[in-house]
Image 1 (tube, protein in one colour):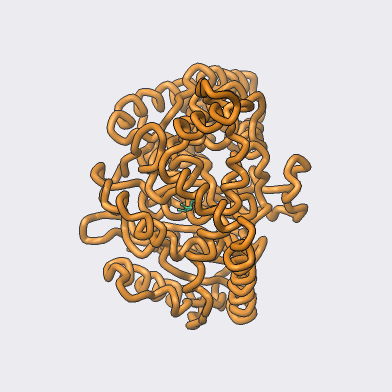
Image 2 (cartoon, helix red, strand yellow):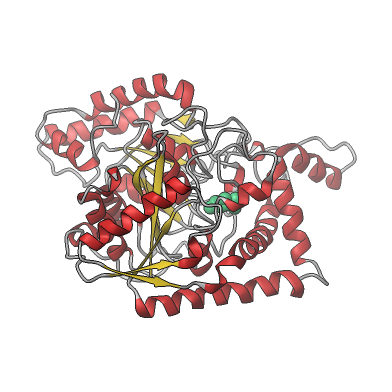
Length: 481
Ligand code: GLN
């Protein structure tokens, strides 16, 4: 059963009416995965037995006339950097190739409590470092729209699982764009909530001040459903925000007339793909026709965002990844020369090239003598970037940009040039630096039929507004521009 033509809410309605059983759907999903994932390779681990067990529980509930949870029997995929108890959780890294966590991430636990069925763990760039899923320690995931192209990253497996009809919903993590970029490249909806909105408990840390869990789906309505479930305070995460979670689904159809949309002039850079630009301009016109007010704004520190991000993210990563020493988790090499040698051998064998590069860069930026010049400076620029947004949000409600400067690129096209790869995040990383929520929605396809992504950004904790503005774009035909 391919899930491309159905949504979560419709599926649950079919279960409720007894028109379909969860068991047949989940069985069908695994048949589909067997077919499609031969080429796409979205999954690292499949959870067939557990999923079928969960499906039987849903069917028993229907048979007993009990009420179903909002996501009962809905197949979801989870990025492999989120812990699922007793299930391999590799983070896309050889260093965790045999790591089986004894607990489950809060976001996953909440999805399961809402009835969702986890079908598997998805491929990703190692430790979420990358924009194409080519940095996985295991294999490359391909874009279901064109198998010669990348699905984006780092949550490429999750995005591809939804775009390829192998899961209805998926979780990813977004440190600098890792939910929004793959959503854009694969032609699905991807949202990164406000920093602290979704608990990071059970999410393998990359850059703790930037990391945030987000979701993938085909429609905005489904994203609103997922967010209602996964957002909210969790005492297991000290940075979790104790802020009320709105009823996102209920708010989707509130009017958008008179909403002020800001278009930052710095986001229409020289060298940007002309077809992407044209689609974004059509999106702007569509919003105008819905009665929104379009205003040009300026985010003057945008040009420093990539440098700032790659200092802060690598600094935090170098500290977070110190824990993989061959003692507490995963892989251990023998290291005949004693403890230091064991550390060295383990990290040498377990980490891939990009992860090593980042540990080196981050350690350098934090070292005595360089700390003030690099890391501290980056923190100051981060504040300036936040202030740019705060100023903008005095004038507008939502900011509209392309998600990425290009459509999905060819596999191998940027692997030799890390800087070119880093630049694919140019429009997404500012959100993470400022802690703001951002969503990427499809906004048509280019002449090669490759999806283009539109990004919308709102002020802190304004996910409701973001989802509403995105939903009405979808309703007005924006996804098919
Ligand atoms: N592509 C960015 C990086 O490589 C962002 C990754 C992410 O959001 N996890 O760091």
